[in-house]
Image (tube, rainbow, N blue to C red; front, side, top):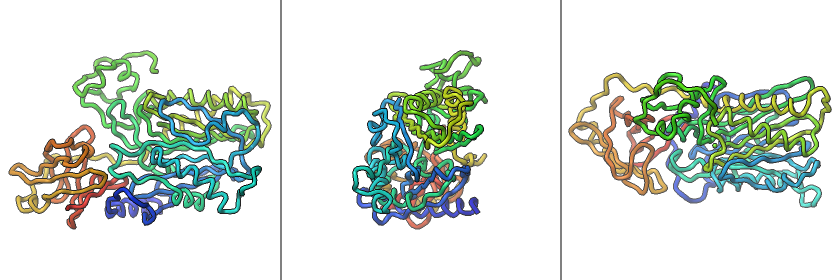
Length: 451
């Protein structure tokens, strides 16, 4: 059923009209789980996701019905948070109703604040000073080269996520706040990322880790290799992240050719949450956050750069005493669970394999595709048929994925209506036949209309 749902959602995305700047009241909302999910036995943790597929962009809400104690650890150089200072005051009180992770950059902060108003409107909280709703949160940047519109999570989307809360179920991959996340930009990987979760129980102690990976660095497995990347042609199969870092800055050039692997230490926005039922006073909860956040540099390399807003929330439901599991060991285990969550964030994405021999549509077919296709937000592609095939250039205010502004690029044909731009990260084009051009058809598609 999940596979069928995913196929339906992917097909539907081909027919989404491009959204221009303006009101979002008419945008369709989805709160369905599409693809993988983590199921775990913990009624104290409720999770809701909602997305605007027209973006795509989304929000993830973690609600704790009995409230929790919470702290925060911020490491990236470009954070975007709400209510984080409240978590730095050192109180042991259980005052937090929810943690919210959102796309939409600073505009997504509306969704974080809206969870508070949603809890009030639902009658769960009120205006009494002892009963004010509290929902700290953090955002990721998912505009720019990721998508061509400026749709963002808002109050409407946040309230939809609240209404869709499920206990013990966390959608993995390109869902919720991770709907349009990317990773590996430092290495030119240009790979889609998402949100991941993992759970472990040791005795009576429960530990859950949740993360949205939108990192400059690359997701790295326990063998030191990149999990997903459009590789540089000069990289050898199985190259380790450490090999590339060791050869900086030369390894950032497209003409760099890897020599022998080297050994040595390795030194993005990623927003994350650790939840435990272990009773921890505020100082110990803060050290848990610090230790787990530091451990994440193993799974994302490099980590906490000046362009990242890396923020980790740690919460305790304060339910269980466990003297046999020391706080340092608890944090070490939590770091491993977080690494599992990081690895689970990488979405399922079929590899694009271009045809061995490009198709050769006729001249009349190519001429019928000519025109200016508007994607909104100043993004436009001009398509022209020439004797050697189809040529495309970005004719708006900015580049469009692999198409540079004002520079014509030849695309190769897959069929009479499908083409691709040959590059390290190929941009695919699908002409729908009714004046629409879909870039990268599927879960991350962007649609333009011929003017």
